[in-house]
Image (cartoon, rainbow over all chains, first blue to last red; front, side, top):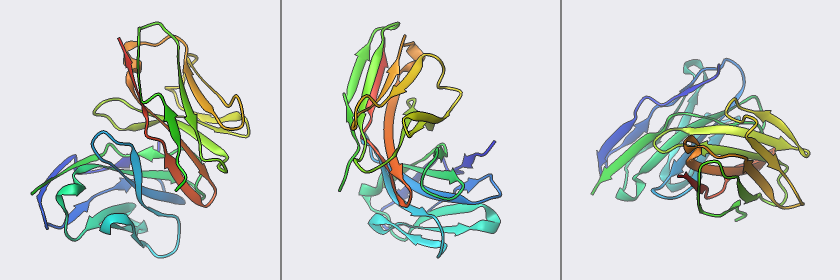
Length: 115
Length: 112
């Protein structure tokens, strides 16, 4: 079965540190890739998505992600985190092309940024 | 920016009772979904709905669950006889080809 793996379950960083959260998926065909953020007590918000084209995708709040097809990876990065980035981060995929169909989520990574 | 609206934000119900969770998807979206997130766990797909019928459902979505689009705007999830393990955050989402997949703010269901 298709799955999404996020390697880091809990990450603690100081402000201004650089962030990279790993995401791998298990499917050999076409996928659409997403990163969502969930701030404490709030709903899922889309950070960025990749459908096709440039594999380096820029999202909101200074986040970016790189799709490396050969590694089945879609890692999330931010050069300098802020305390307000403290949240849960979820990688997700849709199998196939298009923006419809079920999202398969990773287990999430809790990011704690210390001021 | 268009939003997916869910009501109520929090529902407490007794085990065995029926609950209906309500969602208003983005008006020009045609694909609708329900997901759930048990506390401390990942978000899980329950069901997708398109053209007035279920297009896909997970093994979680058993006979106790049903979905309906009773009118042109609402999309509901019904749990017929709630169990303790149904306690979770339930998220509605909608999407359309080429348009962002948008989630609602969720309904926290607590079964006591």
